Image (cartoon, rainbow, N blue to C red; front, side, top):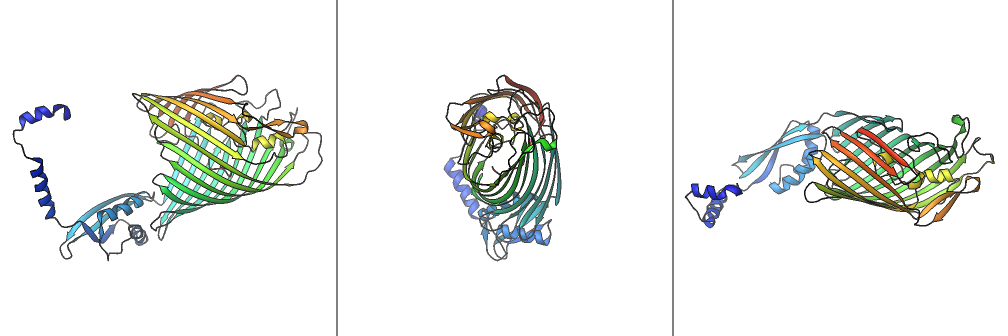
Length: 469
């Protein structure tokens, strides 16, 4: 239109002063009744659902309210997954010079089933099954059952979330999760050195969360949880072994946490727009116990030890649109805790926070990227080759302040230095479909030397939230 505006002007000879047009519009609008509402009529819902909608709109049919008042409650209602659509109509009522608001509401089914999978050339093949049940009455309630099945993760999670209906939206959730992780060093079961090659982790926890909004895309969440964690591993190589050959560390823990999070990324996997930020503070206390059968010669029984520490963590991820088809992503993460060394080197490494910024790094165990205190930074140059087709490169530096070394009798010796830097480099060709993601990747880790990996990934790789976040 702008390019052809001169041609239009030549065809249209009539000219009217903008001031005159605005005056005529003003006079026309001044004759219209004021757009205010009092009565509300709701179709397509049950009585309980109608009561819930009226609570969100904060109207009982007695007081007048404006269009702006209605918009606030309207968008709150649409944010509820139980409601599919709300079509409003305004019908003028001459008796009180106002409009009756008619809402045609379409509700979702109460029960939703979800099926997903991740197919990969590596160890991360996985199947996901989910059931969601939603209720609207005095509160909006959602109940979830999630099941994960695969070589790396097998888990079941039960969750209930209740949303408030007052001025400030809030929710209270209860979650029980039981998960088993089988972690490998890369794609191999054994290496020719003493690095932990095969690790089994079990977590069972009950967690309560209370959350309230800070802005449109951010929330503050407070949590309290109790958990039983079990790690099974071998500290030395055995020629033959069975289930009873694994050493076991068990932790009985309580956790209190506060988390500030903002998320407006455009995708859960391989995003290209928006950003993500979080700050988390946790206090964890409990006890550690250790049992070993025959993996090391010294089998003197050990008593339980208390374990208490504070952990502070934060991270960001941001994508910046550049000129042309170029996108620049930035990512960073930092963790600090004052946790003591655990019973042995392997247990200390397993329970140390890990830096795993890529899909592949989330599915492998690499001790060089685990530390109780670290800083990590990354840059992600991305090229949009075609709609939904991206060439994504990622380069990360990992800077641990503290590291563990294997000491005599498998004890963990803490060293403090910024010099033990590691890197991760990955390139991937990503194609986003409406229902899944396809990616072909190649990556390189600085540890161990020569650690190159090539693979293909189809689908979404999903992991539930863990006890220590």
